[in-house]
Amino acid sequence: MKTLTKPQAENYIILYPISWETFDRMSQELSQSPSKKLTYHEGYLQIMSPLGEHENNNWFISRLIFTMAEEWDINIKSFGSLTLKRNDIQKGVEPDACFYIKHEAEVRNKQNIDLNQGDIPPDLVIEIDITSGSLDKFPIYSALGIPEIWRYNGEVLQFYGLNNQK
Image (cartoon, rainbow, N blue to C red):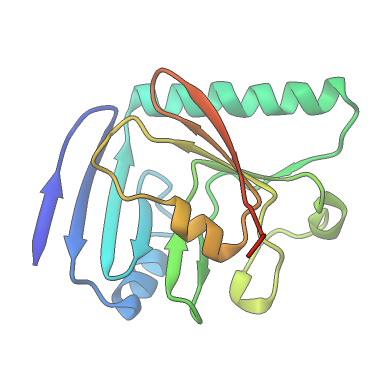
């Protein structure tokens, strides 16, 4: 088993090889521990514990989204750092924040989202990725059908959209 670590604004470890079943079990056991974020892709498991710089940027960008929605009179629903995973494709990720905008009415009264049960993925996720060695989460978000990602690398906020063209 390989492990990689690199402390910065996020403390994390990457483990390989890890089975999907191990990831699934860990995500269930750690679901009550919001201080740990898990990402799983092709046998790699990243366990991250965000630090102050990471969390401050996450809250700032989330507040920006709420402010924009209020100014434009748009209903949104936030699920914060929600575990998004699908057993059929064995991919899972916990974004720093996620929002339903276009599909807000469809999840308005939901308290939980489960992509394995056919729930719609969020319309927008926020990724604070200040550490250059962390796992590339774009293929995971693409496979899960997340249409928009806002990624902040510590200096620049970038906006990405899912291209469904084949």
